[in-house]
Image (cartoon, rainbow, N blue to C red; front, side):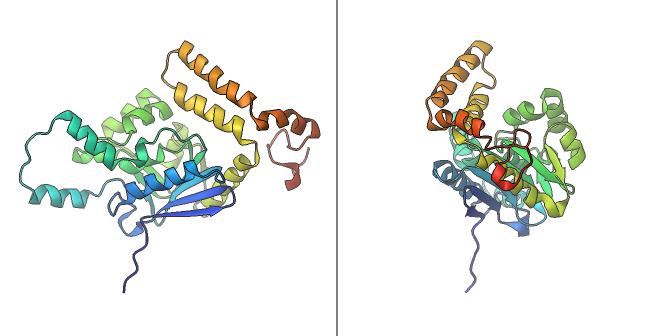
Length: 278
């Protein structure tokens, strides 16, 4: 009897969760229920009070190659031409199929650890992370441009927010494939690491984030994500509203005392119990 592994693996080590896309034989494409399973993993992470930081990565030689084009081709060739559907029906189908990429209320940090190929819908999944680090061998691109497949998992919204309008349109319109260094140059990833060190570095960053009080971190993250694109006055009001809840938290009440005790190294942010120098 063949045991089929789940399309997404979920592992927790203390406050740090590692979510791994697990269809390496097809470069972690969206077939096999992967996108739905990823949405369930994100929701589990969001709702677990003991989980502080998530790392999202892919198993094998790809982070994620996006949609299963072979499956799409089989379906389009075998199916009878379908009558046009009203826009609201199409939108409903997209929403259901893209659950993971349409979650916008996760304010706990999500780190993308990008290994190998990160193309098309896979790039859209990577953009769901709050920031990304990439292996030296990682590559990025809107390669679906070659097959008339649109970006329907948030790429037209998140990519301009991350790399700027012109860089986003450059990638979207040319379908160009870029390497890790160029991805870092335009701000798509924040660090480039040796391939073998990718997960170690991701875990190191996760540990730094998990070690600090979470109320202020999550409040600021929520303010950034919810205020983006709003008029300045609205964004400032939202920041004040979210900040006021942090000011009433236990984390804030104890924060000045931690500073006075010098619990954290002021440069690295590491707890002094880890041996950071002052």
